[in-house]
Length: 75
Image (cartoon, rainbow, N blue to C red):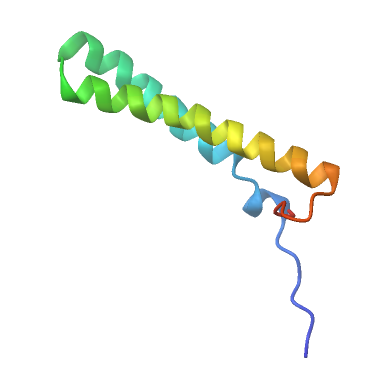
């Protein structure tokens, strides 16, 4: 059986994806805050907040991998 090569880090690192997504939600929040109200503003606020949750999860996983935790996802 052949060895599968490792993927480059730029293809496995999710941090830039989460940062871009959170930034897009932040822009949408500002635009919608001044143009409309109600459900759309709440949706943009939720997307922005969940972006920070995603960043926290990525940080938590990296810390677990550095500690050598058996359950941590290795990158």
